[in-house]
Length: 332
Image 1 (tube, helix red, strand yellow):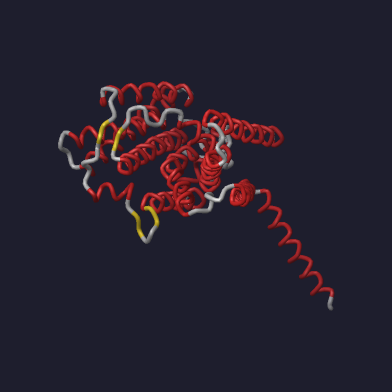
Image 2 (cartoon, helix red, strand yellow):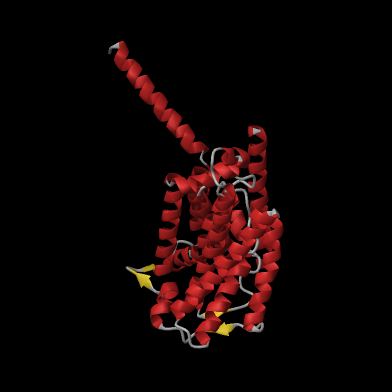
């Protein structure tokens, strides 16, 4: 065997090893391994885990929240955070449901509800980019404002929307080829968002802004527009998720979404979105919400008391944030 051939084989082997090491270091790869390991464990621990009904329930449980996670991930990458997503979902449902009950077409009513969610994002972006307030304070304020508006619209009473037409209910309840339509819609949104974040220049700017806002500004990026766009997108996707929930359950409960921000932020951070901005991926965030849903399902199947479940999720979030902080400190 010639020296040239051996050299080529060595280079190929080195390239494969390097690629494997990069794969192993990816947060997404670690999450996939954890999800698979937990799934294997649960398949032995509970005879109900691998049933079609349970797997379908897990998919449905994170599909609606997963749409919100997409928006939250992009906002975290740009360096922001939104605590109001659960309240915005509830407000969207209340507005759309109320308009439908007074005689408006459900599709038009839903568009107006999503428009209301987008307007919340517009107002929040004004206070962040123009007034100069921090994302946390603004979103905390709108968590209360949106919830208050929801209670005003509904008078504190859940809206019964069982009279919604079948074609509208299909969005949340229907199936195509045996797959729930909401799951298909969820994966389409995830696929488009992940592709745009990786390939589209306009979306890549969120990484530049999140990594170094001043440098991004000096390079000609309109930082305020990028931040405003991320805030509005997050609120709009929360509104869309609210409409899907309304279609699925035929109701608009005013207390819906209380505490949802914990799950959404936890999923994004577990998936690799840093609280310091500049890092994260939609794929990682979706794996994060899938892991949390899998954990919830596993705890229920193992008969773990309900009041332990939030504490366990909080512990998972604490571990993820700690890892993110250690990695960020070492890089600095």
